[in-house]
Structure formats: C-alpha cells, structure tokens
Image (cartoon, rainbow over all chains, first blue to last red):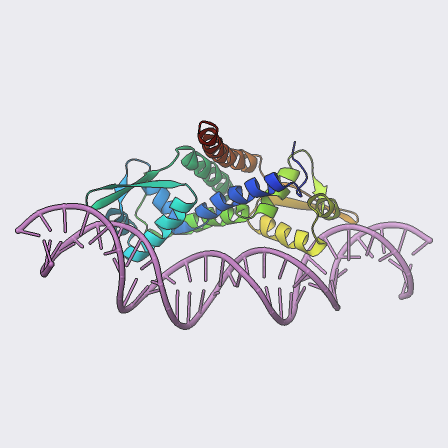
Length: 113
Length: 113
DNA sequence: TAAGCATATTCGGATATTTACATATAGTTC
DNA sequence: GAACTATATGTAAATATCCGAATATGCTTA
C-alpha cells in the first residue's frame, strides 16, 4: 500500500525513482544503454557507434553513472562502461513493448481503412 | 539487433521511447500512477490524495496523457483517469526494485561497520 | 618529463520544465 | 440561463536540460 505523499522517506525514494527514469528519458542515453547490452564499451567506441561528439558521449555517460545505470571501470587508457543492472534493459524493453503495441495498433487502423 | 542510430525509423521510435520515460521522470507523476493502480480516480480525488494544487494535478495528468500513460474518461461532471497499460507499473516496479536493492546494499554496509 | 591518446569538464546560449496564481472552459442542476 | 462544481489553460518566474566548442585532466609510452 502506498503511503501518504507527505511521508518523508517515500518522498525521497520516489525522487530517486524519478531520477532513474530521468536517466532513461533521452534518446541518446537509451541508444547508449542498448549498445551496452552485449558487452562493455569504452567512450570512443560508443562515440563512434552513436555518431556523437566525444564530449556529448561523456556527458550522457556521466548522467547514466549518477543515476546508477552504468558502471565505468578503467583499464589502462580506456574506461569501459557496462550496464549496472540487466533489469534496466528489462524495464526499457517493457516500455518499448507498450510503444510497439500502440504503433502496431495505429498501423492496423490505417490498414483497415 | 539494434540498427545504426542514423536510421530514421529507429530514431523516431527511440524518441517516443524516451518520451514515455520522460513521462515517468517526475516524483509527482510516479505517485499519481501508483495512485491509479487499484482503481480510476478523478482529478479532485488525486489532488487531495497527493496534496497538490488542482492545476498542478491537471498539468501532470496532461503530460501522462500525452505520453499515453493514462486515459481519462469523462463521466458527467468528473473525468476519471486510469492507467493506459498495466505494464507501466511493471516497468516502474522493476526500476524501483533496482533502487531498493541499491539502498538495501548501502544500508547493509552501514550495519556492518 | 614530453608527447599523445582517451576521457571529462567548463562555458555559453537556446530551449524546456515546473510551479503558483489567476482565469477560462465544460458539464450539471436549479 | 444563472449558479455551481470539476477540470483545463494562460502567464510569468525559477530552474533545469541540452548542445557545441574549447579546454582540461588522466594514463601511458618513449
């Protein structure tokens, strides 16, 4: 059961919860997270894959890091980023499925006209 | 498999995907969605439950509507809002679980000091 | 320690988001 | 149609976000 919104702890946890969602709320960051599904990648690698200026990659990675969505580990010259938790992708997939269903439904409406 | 980020369709779908996440990326809206789990609620009801000014409630509901997260249906004087899809809560729960695990882990570190 | 590559940060401007307060619209009932 | 209740929108201020360009930092190897 959900507590009253004035409850301080719930408030704080909900803010963290929203913060995680906020980390996901950008197309570039979503592409980044999916790019990390198979294996860790370094910044340069991501930069090329996503076709971005390198500072932009770093900035988005910082946000993902701050929200605990990715973990970066340095190996010599490179910093390899990986997903902090596989369930992030599960959640993204779930939302993407909702979206797909919606788009498919719209497409079927067009079809039947 | 993920296509190149230059692909126009992927780009568009990913923007919609990010839009959905953006709809979830606010503590008030998260509380709203959870408040709708058991049954539809009208604006006044939500306003009181969440302890908000009524225009604030309406504005957040508008965003949730635009992202297809809730559906509002008028019944006479009231507009009842309900979740557009149960999987929204599934996704939120999944993310909340990740958060809980993280917080629990931190708490256990404190405990063992 | 100098050079070089990988990554991060800073700064600026443009744009978007959130909120409060006031006001408007929509539907109902008398 | 006037009064009333429920909901939505306009406006303005505060705050946050995003990006490009320039620059800084970190690590490695010579």
